[in-house]
Length: 497
Image 1 (cartoon, rainbow, N blue to C red):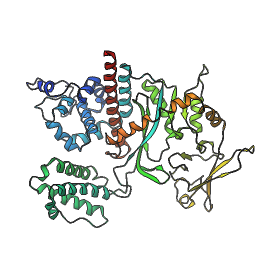
Image 2: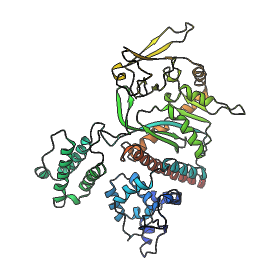
Image 3: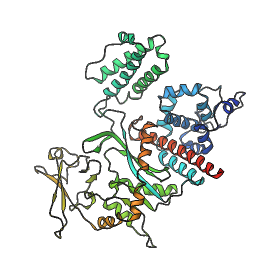
Image 4: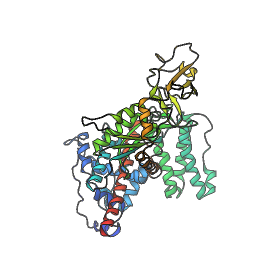
């Protein structure tokens, strides 16, 4: 049963908040900026309104997730901190003397209450709305890019994940008292997930049996992270990998296993749209969705700024589309790469250009092994770039029907290095407007860094694509609110001058 109570009950201690929490505290700014009742409206349908035990209030549960994003901790440590940290209780809307939830409620909330909600779009649209109401967003351009999030699971086995957590726990213990080395159980040396789980369980019992140690904050955090990993991954222990995560490429020789978050941001550094995909998806293909979502959020998109990954033929056609008044859809400030994929001479569906690796990529996510240019420049016939794929992989590919013929000694894809759209874009990128707007692109790199390094979005803490979307939604929501709070203060300061 859903409890609609959202106000503080009378408490003789509520004045502590005014005395102990600074007026410029981040939590005060967020509570002042956002009317969180929109969360209640979005999630009301996920609860029974008149039957069963009273449920934890959805706005408060959502705020717990935001706190976890602001200060990345395990669920157990987050709830424990909320018990004694008055700033957390103030943000959650509970009295100083009130208790807190059981940490297991957070996992249930993520899995049961947020399922099938478009939380990512809802939260971004809400922050854009707040920014526009405060007159912060004035630009008519967006900057687009993708950032990588590694899967919490090793793509061969969970064993290495458990090993890393247990290693960090032991390292913390040894730093406090080297004598604890003699108390540790023998490490697992077998290449077995089951044996690694047994070792971790033994290690946990050993540490918990120690006097004083398990109560030290530094030890407790590492212990709880190991326990949470064990608990959250019970269903995953016998799977070879995170089934939603895929291998993506940061460069020709560098790869990652996980996901991509494709982001659109205004020059004021407010994220106005995002999509989350598996790691092998090309950046350029997400541009139409980012433009559409940005406009839905309220941004009047006249210019899109991105790197060479977005200058594909389809994106150039989308940008050049004209409305009934003859106006272009938007200007695409994306520098051409000769190897843009969409000019394929043959109809090779599913082949895309991977900007990071500087190679063509097939539908299965495999990169070409080499490339060669055919033809001569300025001879009246366009040069052709030919990419060669490893046929040993083609033989066992699930997409080989219609793509690879059994027995063929080679599989190539050729593209023309010049097309009408590219020629028009080449002229545009020589203009002063293009050069001026291209200088704005650096801003999104700092935003990607903030999401990863400040709010823990470098590694997915949830399971699969769904869990990463929830994590990304909360991380983007927090970064947007922080940016809005900062720009609001700057705007107020300018008015007082």
